[in-house]
Length: 317
Ligand SMILES: [Zn+2]
Image 1: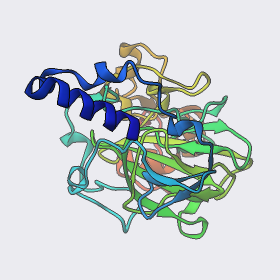
Image 2: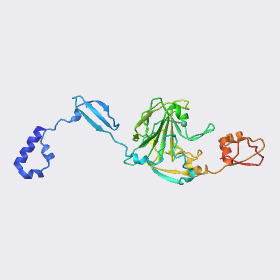
Image 3: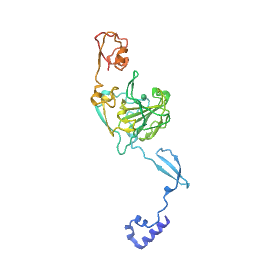
Image 4: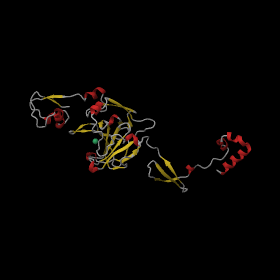
């Protein structure tokens, strides 16, 4: 640095006022390159109160702050219906009040994405064992890292004891109205109200809650309503299916899933009626149509002890 200053002073004296018109870097071209700080080996990184700011320690006892990239969102994006007492938000928003379809921009040059975990899907969005399976199960090894799908804010953290079947659960809200759920975790690494960046490690996979083996149960919800998360991610290959996702109202039906044509999906919302024949029972009808007795009862407004008449029409979906 001293040499550069002397050179500069000499040039200034020689050229007087005209020196200001000279490009200083051009003068530097004739100098020997100065040692780069990067050649001094970093030996450790220390966290600060701000998770996007770290202190790097070098072997020559110097240190410096480094700034990591921050999520391109602000707290103001998350003020509406910010629910923390209950796991699910927007419970007062009815399906009828939602538009027929809504375009959701999932990623752009300022907002990244990450597949929460790459792996084989062991169970998808479907009606399963007498109940709705509203998420996608991805096999993992306990302790595997789970990443935030998009930039967002942690709305809910629940421990094993109070999340029911979800076990250790994280719910993240994203600025476009989507929410993502990460369940059965062995550990969570973020706190409620924390801003997270797409790809940030938020927890470790596990088998807590109602689970028969280590896996991630991942859900996507819009305005509190779940739909098939495989419409957004190809978990097997760890890919986002598209940058723009058009969410259609019929996607919220449990029988509407990724891989169907638009017609097949929209037909899932059409009512199916069963005509009672001799020997029919509600339990047998429920099994036949892959639904539950309680759902049939609520669709028809009668109780499970209702006596069925031959020829009676019963809505089963
Ligand atoms: Zn599941």
